[in-house]
Length: 493
Image (tube, rainbow, N blue to C red):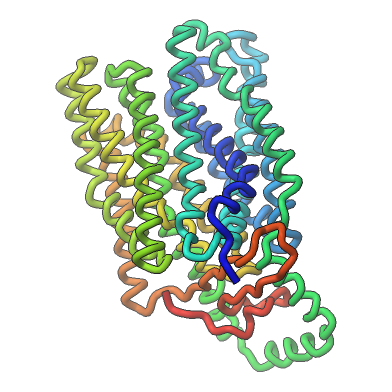
């Protein structure tokens, strides 16, 4: 049977891609509007504004588990539909809040509390969005294009950050600083309403993935033999001691989550440190418009590099995501400190000058864009293949969102504090440590036998075709919802 053409899949994915753009757009808008938000909500506290940025990420792991469970049990389509609705409401709501600058003390305090609540809701929805989308993409990607197809998650994220930085730069140039503080900061949040409704409409008509439908069929067959399954489960439980059960639990649940978490940490730190860097450059005397344009170029470089690396891995390495993921950790580890040292040196010797803008453009746009692109190019498939179909959304959502929640979300706050404590090298040392620790863990894990993984067999037919294709992946975790994967041994990467 012939594989699904890539352009057909992308045409059917457009509601998911649009929603993914809106998800990352909101994170970018808040980060790029930090100079304005710290005045209107946080009384001039930069650390307070970045703490508000981190609130969203602290809720992402919970969202990954809740929506991941929904995607694994009910279906991928209901999960992406509900997560999009939650993100849209939270984003538009932030643009309608009262602030200290326009509405006084009492209303401003209410607006600050509601801002934190809405950002928590945003994180809850976004945490469920990414796991469900990556699972949907990986299970419906055409044969031979698995990494390129799933890299669209990173590409749409880069596009979203380009749109957010471009939107903020345009408004700053047109409205001026006072109007931006009075009401201009609201516009980037409010304009999400129309594309959000379009994405919701498109997602309502999405078909379910063939792999998930096959698993549902196998689950139904298992229920028909429930008595035999219960007897078998009772026999297994009676012969397995608590020590054996604990070892199985660690091997089947904790190890894949921890490996996925470690793999995502360098990408989380690198990606959101790039957002923080625009605020840092503005404080060092670089015009905000120039800093935003540098960020826009960085995201463009990220998208191009990610697609090239994914294409290379698909064609040369047979859709093996390991080596590009390892190269990204190494690049972050060895280049993080030099890149920031160049930025801090340019800020020290060329504050407000053309030399600062030129060095920032080279380091942030080209250097850091290359690092983020390589780091994220094959990350999604690597983490997704650590889990079987019946646990893929939950496993990916928990691993990815733990890294983004506790390292990506706090990257701006950590970078801000370290730049104040150690101006010459603080944030760069943090970036390098994140990459080196991840690199060492992956090398040690591979030397000790490597994590077992579940190769994803893609659907071989268009998504709207009713022909079923068997999900030939490795064995699932030990639970009653297991599918046909039970009969297949897991393979080494």
